[in-house]
Image 1 (tube, rainbow, N blue to C red):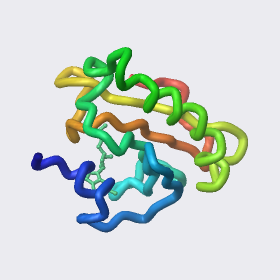
Image 2 (image 1 turned 180 degrees about the vertical axis):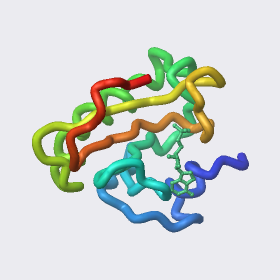
Image 3 (image 1 turned 30 degrees about the horizontal axis):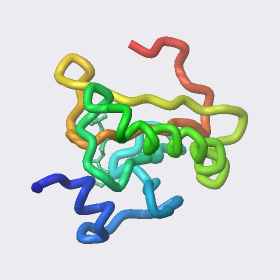
Length: 112
Ligand code: DGP
C-alpha cells in the first residue's frame, strides 16, 4: 500500500522518533505548527476515525494510554492539545490515522 505513514512505521522513510513500541509510533511533524508538534500513529493501517472498529480500537486506547508520557518527553509543559483530522471537511491530508500533539506554548482558544 502506498501510505507514507505505513512507510514511516516500517522504517522505510526516516522520522524523528519520540516514542515507539510494538503497536504505535510517535514522531515529530515535518511542518510543525507549535514548538511541540508530534504525531502519534498506530503501526497498522487505519484510515481515520471513521475506520475505527471493535477489532482495532485497542490501538486507539493504547495511543491514549501513552500520550501523556509522549507529550512530556517531547517537552509539552503545562498542557497540550490532541487533534485528529477526519476526512475531507476535517482537512485530513494523510489517510492513515494520526493524532497531533500540540504544545510548548499557550495555544489559541479558538480551534476552528
Ligand atoms: P493532517 O492534515 O491531519 O492529515 O496532517 C498530516 C500531517 O502529517 C501534517 O501536519 C504534516 C505531516 N506529514 C506529512 N508527511 C510527513 C512526513 O513525511 N514526515 C513527517 N514527519 N510528517 C509528515
